[in-house]
Length: 378
Ligand SMILES: NC(=O)c1ccc[n+]([C@@H]2O[C@H](COP(=O)([O-])OP(=O)(O)OC[C@H]3O[C@@H](n4cnc5c(N)ncnc54)[C@H](OP(=O)(O)O)[C@@H]3O)[C@@H](O)[C@H]2O)c1
Image 1 (cartoon, rainbow, N blue to C red):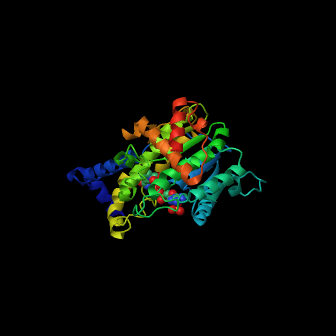
Image 2: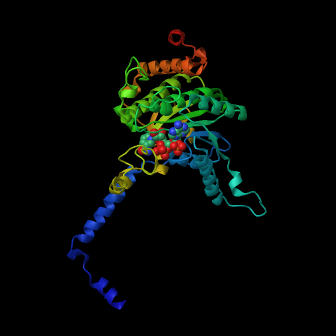
Image 3: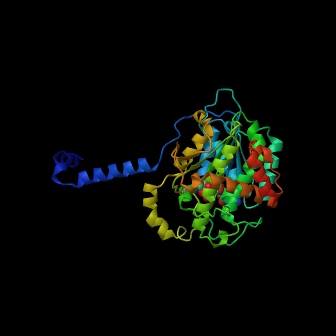
């Protein structure tokens, strides 16, 4: 021990460059990690007793959103297609939050029971399932405060259609969340301040979209590479956010969307053959750790959108790292947004017999009402 102490005392750190290089490397790693982890939700506002629906809340980013909002007092409904995973996620959230709740002496309530976190079945691959989920929820609750349309995937190919006949990216990532939003709208309007949060992606910037067929149902859908189909579905989410917000401007409901950034440790790329190779995982892990967010960091933007009273009047915006940012040029195209919106309503009406109150969605604008009527009757 004594010898070791003498060695340290006699050591001259300036006789070699290694300590400086090591300190620099650590500094760079910490700086890069801090920048890449993005901004945290800048407040810890409580949302006591607010009813929050989160699609895909059983894993990844959705799970972190659910945990944070439950911790702030929300009554959370995890909308999942895998009920075992959903119930496990609900139990984990309640247990983790319960553990941190101080119990007062004589209080015999199980801490885990103080949190309302429940899993309900929805499969976005099936528009019928979306209807059933919405009907059940509306029968049970008088209003809904927040809807987070988080569920979304990159599929292995674009050839397999859903049971409703759509390409899977466009249905799971866009059409089904859009339908769910429309169906729950009367309940969102009944809340003091209803909020809809869509989770989009940076990938929307690479999207190719056909102005005459913005849903890409007729032209490109099945010819798309999954990467392009994903990008297109996330652009559709942004365009629909903008148009929905416009339609709802005279109501208390806000609609915004966000990108979580690049997030590691979720199952988002589960269908990528590249990412399922162990050696690729091992090689890329240090880089992913350095340059990507974890699920908690990726959830921050949606958490802010769901809770921040400062955003009460903010609607139709695209957020990154908890701040409003411009989307791609196509994402800001009002004509394209309107066309997509109308094609979506028309398509959903055809497939699901969804009856849309055309006067309500066009907020009294005579020209738009006529256009939508013509389009849906074509
Ligand atoms: N991770 C990223 O880098 C990244 C980047 C940009 C955008 N995003 C977006 O962020 C959101 C969350 O992704 P994540 O990274 O957390 O991925 P994830 O871990 O795979 O979570 C996706 C969630 O969506 C659910 N889901 C998928 N298909 C569904 C369906 N047909 N019906 C109901 N639920 C379904 C999944 O349920 P199962 O567990 O049952 O499959 C899962 O809970 C997605 O919209 C994604 O596109 C992620």
